[in-house]
Amino acid sequence: MTTQLLSFVSDKTLSLVSPVAAYWLFSGFFYMMSELRLPFFEKYKIHTPEEEKAKNKVTVKEVMGNVLLQQILQTMVGLLIVAAESEDQTDYSFTPISVLASQYQEECFQFFNVISLCQLDPSTAYFLALVSQFMTWVAIPFARFMVALFVLDTIEYFLHRWFHNNAFLYRTFHSVHHRVYCPYAFGALYNHPLEGFVLDSVGAGIAFTMSGLSTRGAIVFFTFSTIKTIDDHCGYSLPFDPLQRIFGNNVAYHDIHHQLYGLKSNYSQPFFTHWDRLLGTYISPSEAKQKRAQTQAEKNVKPTGHSTQSATRINSSLKQSSRVRI
Image (cartoon, rainbow, N blue to C red):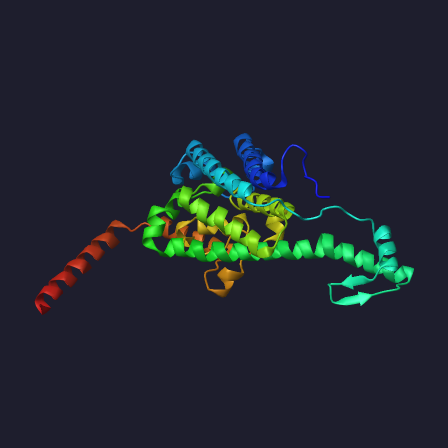
């Protein structure tokens, strides 16, 4: 018999609520960390507070208000969809391996509904029961989860790239997200509401449907995606953060995309980098470091009065010669 994960809320409702709760809790943690300015964490901060104040074009209060409005609208739509859907029929009850092995001895074991194995000895029955439970509880859910990650990455990459390369879409919608030049956790979901609905809600919904995840799988997938996106925008390059260590698409990688020199690169989000690498839009953190150093060097080189006068004389001569030719 299928039971709810939590007695006071259905699994489907939990799949909508858990990402919202994760956003405020996880973002709140990083915000508190930035406010306390603890030396241990500050040494891993990508941008200084002065840089954030100078470059970011929107306040934290405005960001939080925008995200809250999006979450209210998206949750309301999600609740309507949940109400219209039938109940999840997935059986989440776990049968002990020893009990399952006994059943395999007494009955014919169906292997993927293709091969029937009857009159099994105890050791073979136990082994098949072990494999069966591993496939049911680990291998198949993990495979579906990975499919969901890859599908979401594909949708995000091509839509994100389109929003950057289409002047109307960038100016009208996506430029809202890029008001935050120095990313921080609360800004992870700061978008134009329509873009947030299309990229985040619809994109994640398509990935969930195509992967075949169960409702509880959706809880994990939606919540994990939210946490990963927040971590990518947290503003701290933490060597001990497992998400930043496991995934190449991390805070250092995505921060490049928020800088002027990286706006046309590193579109992939929020998990992998394969689309950027395959389609030539990849910039590594080491390459970005070189670009920053080059930009800074160019700023430090100031033309002298003599060189400025020389340049003026050269330009004047060019104009005169042009008039003569005409």
